Structures are given as C-alpha cells and as structure tokens.
Amino acid sequence: MSFDTWSDFFAMGGHGLYVWLAYGAALIVILLNVFGVRVARRRFFRQARALERRARELET
Amino acid sequence: MSLFRAQLRREWFLLIQNNEEVLNPLFFLFLAISLFALATGGGPDVLRDYAPAIIWVLVLLANLLSLEGLFRRDFEDGTLELLVLKAEPAFLALLAKVLVHWAFSGLAMALLSPLAALILYLPTSALPTLMLGLLIGTPALSLIGAVGAALTVGLKRGGALLALLVLPLYVPILIFGAGAVLEQMAGIETLAQIYWLGVITMASLTLAPFAVQAALRVSLEQ
Amino acid sequence: MALTDTLRRWWHKLGSPRWFYEISGPWQTGLAVLATLLLLVGTIWGLAIAPADYQQGNSFRIIYVHVPTAIVSQTAYLLMGAAGLVLLVWRMKLADMVLAATVPFGMSMTALALFTGAVWGKPTWGAWWVWDARTTSMLVMLFLYIGLYALRQAIPREEAAGRACAVLALVGTVNIPIIKYSVDWWLTLHQPATFKLTEAPSMPAEMYLPLLLNVLGIYCLFGTNLIGRLKVTILERESRTQWVRQLVGSSGR
Image (cartoon, rainbow over all chains, first blue to last red):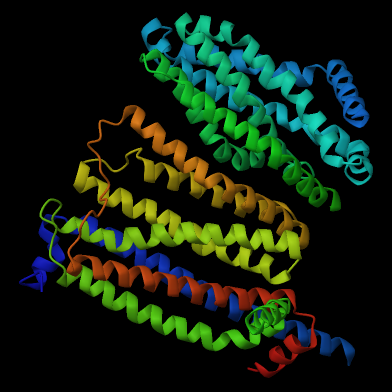
C-alpha cells in the first residue's frame, strides 16, 4: 500500500484534484459508452415493437 | 493525352471567363493579411516574426475558398457525371481540373508572395524559401483539397464541413512550409523541409486522384 | 491449405451481418468480464499500490488513464482506416458498420486522452496545455474523428454516407504518420526540451504492470463496446428482415 490512511489516499500528496479529475472523467466517459449501447439497444426494441403493433392494428 | 489537353483547355477558359471564382480567394488573401497588420498595430518586429505563419495559414484558408468552386459548376450542370462515368481514364481529366485550379490558386499565390512578404516585412533573404515552399507545397493543397471538395460537392452548405475535413490534413504542409521559412530566418539550412513538401506533393499526386474519383462517385449517387 | 480455407470461409461469413450478430454474444460478454477485471485490478494497483514517482509525486498516477486511452484511440483510428478499405474494395456491409461503430468510442477516448493529459500537465509542468508533439498529434486526430462524424451526419443516404466516410477514414489513416512526423519535427524547432512527457524510460515492474493491465483492459472494453454497437446497428439496418422481426416479436413486454 502506497498510502497510510484514506485521507492520504484522497489527498494524493496535494495532487488530489488532478488525479481525481482525470480518473473521474475516465469513469464518466466509460460509463457513457457502456450505457450508450444499452440505451440504443433498448430504444431500438421499443421503437420496433411500437411499429409492429401499429402495423398489426392497421391490418385489422 | 488529348483528353488531358482538352480538359485542360476547357478548365482554363472556364476559369478565365468566371474569373471572380479565382480572383476572390486572392483578394481574400491580401485582405486578411492586411487585417493581421491592422490588428497588431503594424509594427515591423511583430509582423516580421509572424510573417511566415500569417502567409502560410492564409494561403491554406484562401485555398479552401477556391476549392468550393472546383467541382460545383460541373456538378450542377451534369458534366461532372459525364466526366466520372465516361472519361477514359477519368483520373486524367480530374488531374487536368486540379492542375488548372492550382494554377489559379496555389501557383498564383506563390507568384504573388513577394508582395505579401513586402507588406509583412519578411526579410528578402527568406523570400526564396517562401516561394519555393509555396510552389512545391500548394499542389498538395489542391490535390488533398480536391478530395474534400469531392466529398462535399453534393451537400447544401458544404463549406464549413470542407474546412473541417481538409484543414487537419493540411497540417503537415503548413508545418513544413512555415517551418522552412522560420528556420531560414534563424539561419539554419532548410532543404529538408522543402524535400518533405515535395514528398507530400508527390504522394498526393499519385494517391489523391483515386480518392477523388471514389469520392465523386459517392457524391454523384445522391 | 487448411488455414487459408478456414480464413476464406470466415471472411465470407463476415459478409452476413446476421451471422455476426448471432455468434458475437459470447464474445461480447467475455470481453466485458475481462475488461472489468483488468481495469479494476489495474486501476486499484495503479492508484493505491504502486509507489509514487519520486519526481512527479502522485500526479504520475494519471498515466494509468492517460496512456491506455491514447493508445486505444490511435488503434481505433487505424481500425477505421482498415474498415474503410474493406468497404471500398470488397463492399462488405459489416465493414461500414464497424467504421460507424468505432467513431463514438474512438472520439471519446481521444478527447479523454487530451483531457487527462492536460490535467496531468498542470501539476507536472505548471500548464494546462502545452503544444508538444503528442498533444498536437492527438488534437489533429481528434479533428479527424470529428470530421468523420460530421461527414456522416451531413449525408442523408446511409450507403453513400458509409462510402464517403470510408474514403475520408482511409485518407486520414494514410496521413497520420506524416502528421506525426511533421509535428515531431516542428517541436524541435522551438522546444528547449524541458518538456519531456513521461517517456516512461525504465519503470520498475510495480509501476509498469498496472499500466499493462489497464492497456489490455481498455482494449477489451473497446472490443465489447464495438460488438455492442455493431449489434444495435445490425438490428437497425436489418430491421425489415424476418430474423430481426422475430427477435423483436420475442422480446415481448
């Protein structure tokens, strides 16, 4: 372990702002990418099902 | 060969007749240079230091302006389609187009550069490097720019998109062109950068026509 | 020869988006698991266990984010160039989808690399932004990505947009070595060589290994993200086919 206490860990020897900015941004970008895919997939199925439903309604 | 020559002649006369297409970018070049002089207070020291950068950047931008008209007229009246589909080989006709375009843009700017150098206080010892760099580097600007123009010719407001697509690709030419003059002004040998400009132009000459052709085919489908 | 036969068969199969959709599920999951493991271990190791750099202190830990994102963004661009080539030469539909699917991830990684580089620069050299060889090349590459995105948006017809982006991606890929070389040279013009972006000359293993883990992890993340986006694109573009409509039907809710 490179740090003695949790507060040492968060402070990062005075560089805390920078380190956490960088890692925070990375986390956000990665999550956006991962969830972007899930959202897109769900949106497709939602729209496709709605289209099917409307098509079936028009037939009857 | 005769296809090449015929296309050359056609482009030449078209551009001479519609000369505002070629004159406007040249006017823009000198107008923008003047803007820099005005914005910096016109002091010789400041202008001299930035002269290579100002000239080269504005040559790039003026080139962008002139690229808009490269394919647009032919695209709109249908001759572009004929050229791409019927001309055998199409890339010769396209090369002729780009050559004439370069004559009226890059070449013209290279020939006018002593004037630009004068009003920006560029030392005369740096002038040959500037002119040589422009002469050798601007064909690449026309060739690479032609790819961008081909990709955007069918689009409604393709001008800004053209700039976005083409300027990143222009970066090496800018670096070597302006860098050569800066090095010369610092007293260092500059042949290496000129050679690199030559390399880029040669590579563009061999590769760009195919990219232009592919891009035109895509644009014409729409 | 057996190997070339298998390769050829596999190449032909790639021509079918449906085949890819159906076989890629396990790969997507596997890569996701790998990515999570590698990135978790690598990040924790890099953040908490690896020793601080004696010159830069703890800010050097940003390397574990910055370098992987920079590396993967460049690989992604090369992949787009290759996909563009495949599309133009062999007209493989999947290649167009690969190109389109790579842009969001690649672009966000490039932007992230630039951001983390800036954040790293401030405590290290006192400046948020420095025009050095790597940042400049990366910035130009970001513009190349943006251009690809803008071009696709500007062309309404899907197939034409795909081919236009393929041409642009190919032209960009050919240009990247030249851009890098020119920027490298340009830097020697001015630079008094005080800025040496951590060349990581000889890092002890305990500092180097978490970096390796994170690089591998981010590649796995790239892979799983790519497959995920590809699958959605395939669904969207093949939405009128029987097999997709069956999927939609059985997705019930």
